Length: 422
Image (cartoon, rainbow, N blue to C red):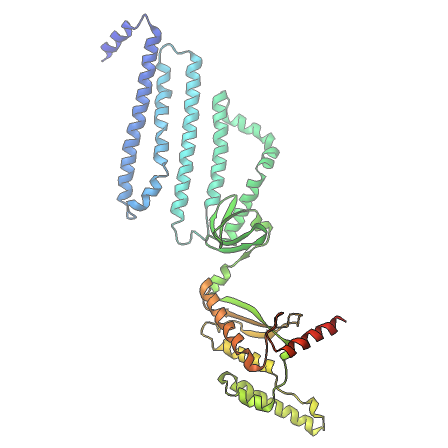
């Protein structure tokens, strides 16, 4: 083989450029073959090894697509070119130096890209852990990538200009202030990511509400610079990570962990329909099973109170009597206490709020067992359907601007409103 090469070299001696081109072509062919063989051997071996693992090949095929090994295999042809360019005859020394520098820069960049892909693979594997959503590492891996790319850029520049890496790195110390100004968002995002990961204020899958950023939905991604929220209207909002430590937001995770969702809603009662109940009406309300204890207790309480007033000779107008609103409030309390959809281990109350020009708010405060949206709305609607339907049984009306009450009631209301305006 060597004799054949010497014969060929002798034959091309009158044409030195032809021999140089032939050696360059052979060197490029060797580099291509080295790259091809490396990828074929390594990739096939990797796939076989992954399929032999307990997790199976299907789960790992997506990881293989990260192309860590194919990217790293590109180092081999660069090594072949760097080693072989010095033996190519007829090449100027400057060309050899430039090719060496380019090969070294390519090797450094390729290794960095492979490490970046490997970090992506680490994140994919980590996210399979059951508690990965509580402590995401994607932000930290992105910081590692940024630091690595900065060092790689410095190394490539040093290689291409023939300077030492440490000299350039030391010279950058004078540009620290400028660098911090340029990367201030990244630095703030890094601090925010560390704080978020340490105190767990936001995790994957959390429902957060941030009106200032038009975010109201589930967190689907936590990265260094942004947190991605999939809103309930199926739109996607990306919130800068630093805003989660500088602005207020609501995290509904506590509701999910507690297993109870609050109902806080009011019935607006027409104050003109509130009145005392006559004895016959009180007796009629005893047919409501939920009111037995309330009416019996109230009857005994009022009897003792009014008896004391009678002993002192007080006028009947000073006597206490049962009201339809108080009876309705007691009914609602008992109805909630017996409703299967209400969480009875948490606060349940029915209270009157301050009267407004839209009526007297009777607010229901309770919690449902099911925190899911549809079951929660079903329970809430079921409760208010029943209360609105049974409200006339107590002689009460819901306040509304266009009332369906009798004409005389509407006229009295208009007259009362006109008198208040005067």
